Amino acid sequence: MSDGAGAGSAAYDAREHASRAHVTSRPITLVEALEALPATPGRGFRFRALDGSERSFQWRELVREVRRRGALLLAAGLCKGDRLTIAISEPQEFVLTFLGAVVAGIVPVPVYPPSGFKAKSSYLDSVAHVVRAARARALVTLAASAAAFGQLREQAPELEPLLIAEDLFRVDKVPAEPVRFDRIEPDDLCFLQFTSGSTSMPKGVMVSHRNLIANADAFLGPQGAARREDDVTVTWLPLFHDMGLVGFVLGTLVHEIPTVLLPTEAFARRPTIWMQAMHDYRATITFAPNFAYALVAKRSRDKDLEGLDLSRIRIAGCGAEPINPRVLRAFVDRFNRAGFEASALMPSYGMAEATLAISFHPHGTPVVTDRVSAAAIKRCEATPAAPAEDSIELVSCGRAFPGHAVEIVDEHGRVLPEREIGEIRTRGPSVTAGYHDDPVASLESFHDGWLHTGDLGYLADGNLYICGRIKDLIIIRGANFYPQDIERCVADLPSLRRDNVVAFSVMERGEETLVIAAEGNASDALELRKAIADKIAATLGLATERVAVVRVGSLPKTSSGKVQRRRTKQLFEQDLLEEQRG
Image (cartoon, rainbow, N blue to C red; front, side, top):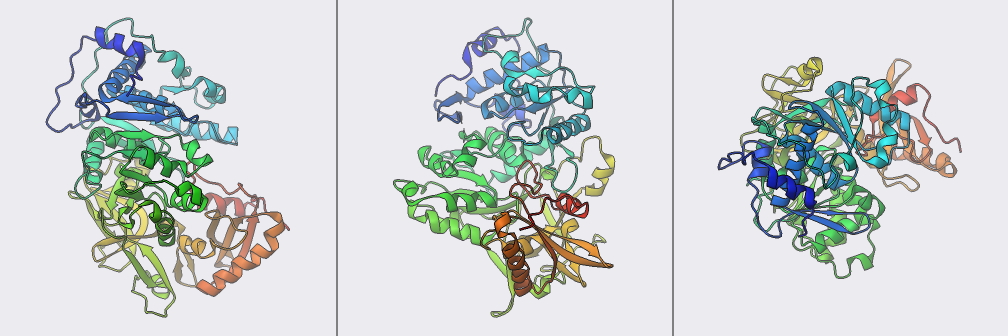
């Protein structure tokens, strides 16, 4: 590996008079984990650029550069406990800046970078909300993105002038005076992870160092990915969200796993680059949402599989959104000729409020699914379906980690037996303290040591199955319908863009009725409306009040690509959806 830290890092390391922090046998903070990283040749982080070039940091080189950046942030006037908003799209700059803040005791607040956002005013509104909610003192970004934040201080006047990463962290810069870092304690705030906003305005989850270490030990421990000495991870996931940040930067640092980070844009342009990178770096672990497995299987061509060796992959995790068993089977069918083993698939469940992961399917074992009666599930019962009965197939997300617990409860908090559907709640050292500066929202989700997730699910043979969000549940004539099931049943229709369909209900004539919003072309709109309504009626026995076919790209989504059901419903009720009238 080359020394990506540069001359400035070496210079700072030479003049640094503060000794390395005492490191216990097991780190209890992220800072201790960084200091404990060994000087092992060839192990560290590799950052791939869009043009295919690569910069590498061995572990000790990484630590030197991170400490230099932390010192420069303190020299710029920031103090321990200050919140620093980070809006950086380039993985290398993001990771080094984030970790630099952490070692200095400054609290990073990652936000979606401006590149790729179509509506500038909407983007600024979102960032301003995060800045105000976090009470951030400063924002750091790249020079190319600075113009996007020109009017931000009008909405967040307490924010100090922008910090430009290229200027602040120039490779030849070192602090004018020696800097001594304050001690970081396990219960200190490590970072603020703002939720994706799929159900409401984003809220800042307070992740402590203790939470982070506990969750990393859980998802990389024996009941998780079972970290091995020869592991190498590859990711293209955005680093401003918890799966990419905690799973492939912070967790891999805590457990000293070499990691290759690809630009998210590279995957968006050519999804097969993900599998090619797994081959190139002989990687063993990766994770992605359900849509990514569907996309790479669909976009790959036979020639992409020529010479491809995926036999080293032992963990291919799937989470962050509903998991479709047909997608997993299609991925295996596509890539087993390249040596991919179906037993590598690892469905999982988690959320930012629990740092990242809550449950994993046991590694190295076949995926488990449960086929339940479609009629029974409307009554909140997960009864196994008879052979000829209409049914729904759900994927097991495994069991809670050691030291953690998962329960299913009804609206009164009563613990439900297996195969009864209710709210999922969890507790354990990974569960965070709540939402920053938002006691009302915290009290709704966090009480008596339990995190009430707002997700519906059930247990069967000890395995956890996810049904949907409580607030998204559609109740028609006393029967419960999960929007994901409705969306899934029409996802394969011709002319319908996969994963760009939203089901929700509205009140009409005093009754709750079903509405579908789907992206499609104007030339297909008339046929698509009929096809969607017919398919839902035939599959689920539901009458659709209205099918709104909207122009491609107009359905509201979070920055991570999740559909915003409640926002879509709101636009529909305000007659603001741009429907195709063909």
